[in-house]
Length: 444
Image 1 (cartoon, one colour):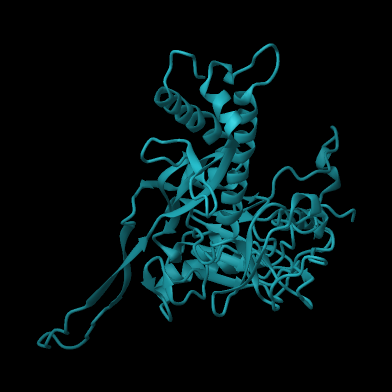
Image 2 (cartoon, rainbow, N blue to C red; image 1 turned 180 degrees about the horizontal axis):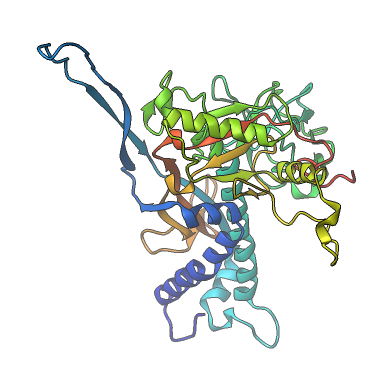
């Protein structure tokens, strides 16, 4: 890091490079689902103007049959559409005090006399920050309907008690409970029907017991909310409502309406993904085959086009457990009897389970149709080269304060070109004893 003969500008350049190489990798490693998708998807670099792709919307084949001397029909009509996606910024702030900043600028920023200096602490803390960004990106790619939802209000909410839904009902991220709520984080309670912010809150770290991740109830006794939430309200990061990235539930659905990828798709079959509503049935071959069948009929093909089955951990366990029912006892063939099922697969396509996928959904997708759009990161967001900025004091002082901060984040989004090339099974039965984001900490 910085030596006595180096100036602050040199230090900033080294720091930016260091963060991009080390913390950026930490972020990616802690987003396994995002890394899996980006490894197989098309990759595009884009900017503020967004990214556009033309797509086939439909055609009208004007056909006419008759005698050789007939008049030929009017021309056939072809319709083309235009999808457009714009960047979404996902950013975190890291702040240090003036003393740490002074040490960072000096030769004593590293390890001195076998004691950790500010650089080492900063390295550890930025690594945790990078992991946090990775977890957020992974969760939102798996569950985002672009609302920014982290939890859904249920039960009988009040200004002092807010129960959060753990029931899976086909709605994205509906059953995650309080698993995504943390102390010292700013949240808005938003009403989906109006997009209005009902109230906001932050739970101090010393009162993290107010976030009960077993009962999934937020306790505001002694620190009442300014207004009572209603059933169906959603919790989102403060100031982020309806600015989220396009996650799998947003990309792959059969009931899309309104603006989607820059196009009005209401009542437009061409923009819909084939969907099977499981109506709380357990996952089985029949449901998957129905999804494949819809996809083949929609595309008028007899071939099973490339697809990958992506589901949550609970559905993978459900599928594997059904395999035990037909387990052959002579599997060992005279050798060691292996009673496990190594991999769950269907039509040579493995079920790939990821922690953040909604527990009641299965996605049959052709990942090569996904376009991973990237403008920046993950890394320090600093177009002007200034990594550290001094915080401004509160009025009436209005000048700087002894806090320095840097911004770390990712700017990008996801889109697809051919909604008809995929299928989704939704509203699957979720065994209450199988682990999900809301139940993995229980003893059952």
